[in-house]
Amino acid sequence: MRQSGFSVIELLAVSAISVIVIGIGFPVFQSTSDTLRVRGAIRSVQTELQAARHRAVSSQRPVRVRFNCPAAGEFRVVELIGSTSEPDPADAASDRCSESRYPYPAADTNVLTRPNFDGPIRRLPREVAFVNPGTIEFWPDGTAHMDQGTNPWATIPPAGISITAANSTTSRSVSINGLGKLQAQ
Image (cartoon, rainbow, N blue to C red):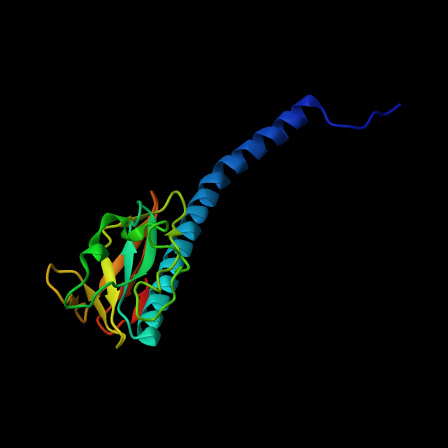
């Protein structure tokens, strides 16, 4: 009588080969997963920057994109309070990114009051962080500006600046120039 099945040695050999294949494949899978998270994060940032520029142009009001606001790895589009040459001191306050103080959507949609166009707080994936971000300001003419300690803010140079998101293994950036042109890198 013949018995079918596998011997213990055959099962151990198959198990050993499986462990080796998984051991080799896991780091590749992890690296790919990290890259996809960062790429998704930078696409989200690029989308918010485009939406902020569009909001500034369509509403004829300056709009800022604030990074690490209210906490690391978070960002928010906020309408500038005051004017580009004289921003309201409340615009620079630490609670400017607070959704409880400046709700989304705005409770008051009166066009004579501000802010009306603050967006929701966006969050990067847990393992992803911004690298040296600044605040970007879009004007109603679609141009992009950055804070250099003076009002109104200076136009971003033609070479542009980059907003970078990274994790422990990879990083990606979106560059923006003074004309408001965005390009993922």
